[in-house]
Length: 342
Ligand SMILES: NC(=O)c1ccc[n+]([C@@H]2O[C@H](COP(=O)([O-])OP(=O)(O)OC[C@H]3O[C@@H](n4cnc5c(N)ncnc54)[C@H](OP(=O)(O)O)[C@@H]3O)[C@@H](O)[C@H]2O)c1
Image (cartoon, rainbow, N blue to C red; front, side):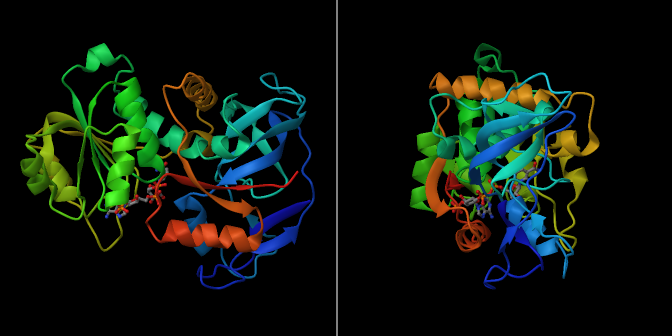
């Protein structure tokens, strides 16, 4: 089958950083579904793995952790899906990704594709939705009952990016929080408002100054999606006593952060990594399938909207490399997708 893979870690400006390859079509077995891929999205994790894959790999490393497609065959231990089902999922970073015509996926981390969305629009959603959902509702323990959150607020740093676009919606439309998002350009500021943000502040300025400018005294929750170290002092400044902070991005080794800044306010600090469940095969791994099905229902009900803004054409090495370049620019608004010609 056709796929796009990495054979040598190269910068995005090198045309051979991604290559069109021919690999064996996988076979469904055990708990794995064989999915015929219809559309894929791209995330910053793809670019990070591309740059760290190594040199002269004996087999191409297939990237891609956002997929919408149709189940072609099921393994002997599968019970949740059957051939012909339309699905969407992010997958497992320890295994081959979905940048090919077919893909094997553990059925426990698969959701039913929203019926009202095209494959292209559905492919934009899974990885970012899992990340935002787990961060808000599991790591920070925010209630999904809006009445229980009355008077509570959240700051979402990086509100217009892939994760931010769905995090703002979940925080506003499901949890009913007052949502303050960050954006640095008129286009991204407007996008955050379109997703449901009540206020938008600029992440190029000090968070404390921005809070004063818009008349805010503090927030109960912070979800930091970009620039953990850059925003560390600002977050300690604007979080309310006994607030909760969730991080999703590593700090660089040359950017140590001082955890003690959060002690006077007794702030709870948590990490979200959406590949934890699949990587460690946790006992609750099937919760990812459950949350994708719930998100699918909310998308079909019109509570949530898809976040696709761009289409980069059919999946091939040249188009995928352009998509990686866009992600690496740090200027993504919502999500981009590529389709797999059927
Ligand atoms: N832990 C996990 O499970 C997990 C899951 C998904 C993603 N991630 C990581 O989370 C990060 C964000 O992912 P994403 O998909 O949302 O990325 P993305 O779509 O590429 O994010 C782009 C957005 O980042 C904003 N931005 C750029 N510089 C910023 C800064 N200094 N401070 C705040 N915002 C800034 C930009 O807004 P402006 O244009 O307005 O500046 C832009 O809209 C990536 O590093 C990714 O690897 C982690």
